[in-house]
Image (cartoon, rainbow, N blue to C red; front, side):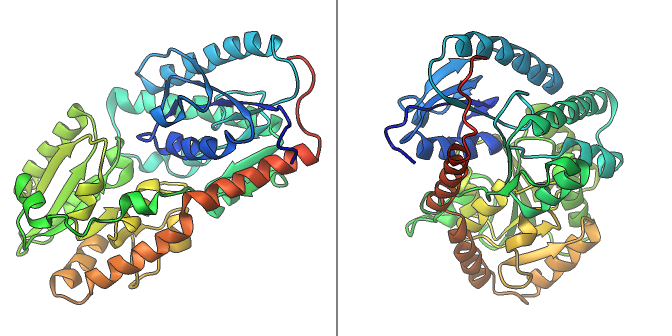
Length: 395
């Protein structure tokens, strides 16, 4: 690639921040690509690490419900890009997350909404108005992703599993697919030698001899598997020292699961700490990271937990199945309370060396560092330029 080439790269994503699962990956990508491209980012919010590296076009959008948030965002992005591109000189490329912008060169999906609706939606335990709104969100994205995939020259996915699922749902894109696994900052998540695990636990009501399973998610606890975890505690009647540490969630969702724990008489075994910008201390004080999710395409929080030196207890899902080795760096479980209980009983009985498994998990995470991730993205764009797929005409 000619390093003097002045190519503009327009990137569309709702939130490019470290706290956003997809956005944090794009953050890393753009840090690498900013050395080569003149990058314009269209998003509702931007991470401070990008402020000096890109031109930021802020797109206002309501915070809820999700379907309205994405719909308004996409409409406003279309209007903004039309104006910006009409005044753009020289070649450019456009990258979008999923189907947030239709006329893209590169689509970067972190989900397959059509597949989720077809295969998993009926299993969702969400009820009432939230269920209606959530389904509308998936229906909207299924429509939008199809249009973007058709227009894109390349569709980049975080896992081989999602790649297969996308091709199953949209066979015409089979030749466009490339897989780039999500990155993790292994140095950032490494536990400090002087980390005081005992005191950290004490501050949130956990004891030194507790067996702590951490669980972290921004929301959608039902899909992520928190109900199954709480139910598993009720099956461990004689092991009250097994605790679940829940990081994330909004107040209303947290309260609903407090009530669930109370109803199942395990309220003293579930600790909710709410949303945290930095989840590392909660990983470092844990014995196991538990994530029995219904559907993921490459769980970023699982590889973060691995980088923090915590063995993983996860359901069979895209991405995780590529690096989790049962008995070595974690356990693959069925998404049932009974399956979780069976592993926990063996843990309580001391049948696993959790420290060694955590060390193995940390070594696994080393394969997913930022340098490798950024290099793979650079190759994607080099290929587009070599094939003369850069846009040179007016919008």
